[in-house]
Length: 418
Image (cartoon, rainbow, N blue to C red; front, side, top):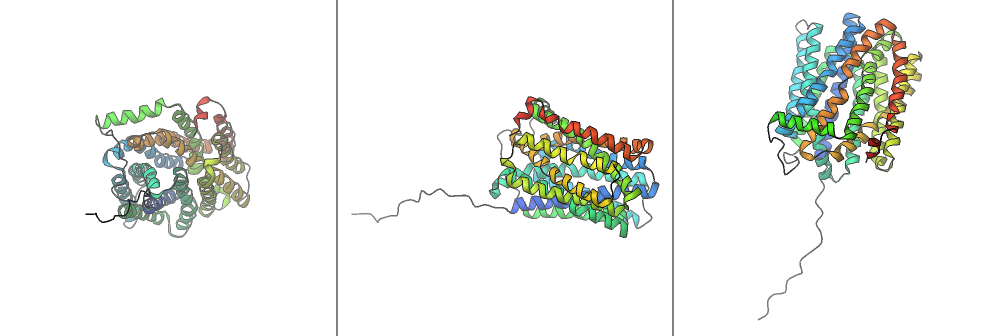
């Protein structure tokens, strides 16, 4: 008796279906949240300048806008690792949006004093930073699910930050000019809600790295210490933090005090400020997308130095020279284009060195370290510009920025860039 003939087994490898949806959702949510942040970063100094006329108080407001990123990055990254990346992203955005919504709601019944507005912006930033860290930690797995190289995903992810300048800054300038700072901040609150909704609806719960060792072994402080020690013991991560902390000090001084003061004094106010920040964001968006497409083929250290040299000093020096608005627009577009490569390049290096179960706490520690001097930059620029004038401070800062931008040319640790 013969058995029925059966077809031979199909041994063709099965390629997993690509699912780009979660990656698109993460990028969209990140872009919405960052756009709202940019609206507030533009609206807040203009609001303080209009209410007080003081560059010093504007610097204080800038310091309180940047400080929560440091605190939230250091301490919030561990919480994100413990509670899960998706959940942390949703909860952080909802909490930040609720906090910001208090400001426009209070304006309906008489408004808040300056110190209360600054305190609420500080609290919102404190809650928002872990959400940004959570989305960054989810990105490699979302990229793998979509079948996209991580460099390209990081380029798109970084492009959302740059796009937030392009969209958020001009929108903030227009909102402040037409409807007031409180309305601009209300839009910020709405973007947080939108980001939380997108992640909740389109990022699956299963999109969490599977690792052998548990991130919560030993509790919060043990996990916190492990993340800080990881950064402290890695030569390249230390070098990245040191470079970016100094350049961010200068950038914070420019963004939160020097540029608003110059725009207010001789460029036309809110509309000019929004335009300059917006076109820099537009240039950076193009730079990020281009780096995402071809960055893996470029020499990393040379690209990093060139990007910093073009992105950093020229806006300072052009502002110090007293250039008019439209030549400044050209300088800011070029600077933004170069800046677009910086974050994806450095973030690719970080991802290559950090275990999956430690992403949030290590990214948080690196980010906090990179932002550590930004409140000092904002506060110092406020005092220095009142004492010496904005042009003099811009000239000195631009020259120092150039020296710092060249430092990756020395040191063996920079040769470790992948």
